[in-house]
Length: 147
Image 1 (cartoon, one colour):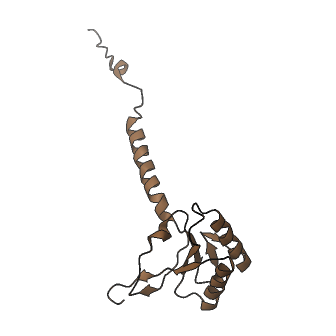
Image 2 (cartoon, rainbow, N blue to C red; image 1 turned 45 degrees about the vertical axis):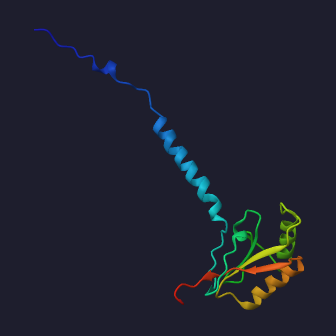
Image 3 (cartoon, rainbow, N blue to C red; image 1 turned 90 degrees about the vertical axis):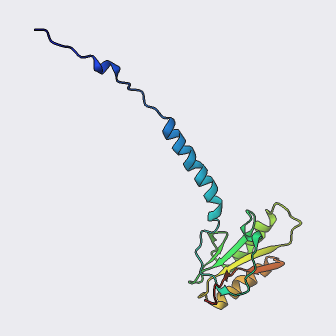
């Protein structure tokens, strides 16, 4: 009686195939590259709803200056919290100086929460006017079916 010896262990391939992992990682990279610019504003603000909303495509540009006033009265310039109204003025002036086309009109997009204190919104508008803003655009949401 002889013992049958099997040599199947020598046929096992121990190399790791990384091609599927690289494919998945490239797809994820492309998805994140496409979605990241859409996350422009870090501040969540409940905008007022109006019937006659006008679409402002310039507000989504990379060099657009957005100022947000939240419900609790905090003011954010491009997602960075402003410590005071003088800070708002200086940040808006600095961003205007960095614009790619300096010949453009100085316009700022204001996103004020529906329940924000109007006095605080007015203070933010005054600070932007002090910074030399020519045009102030108030951002709103479109009301659907009168709701």
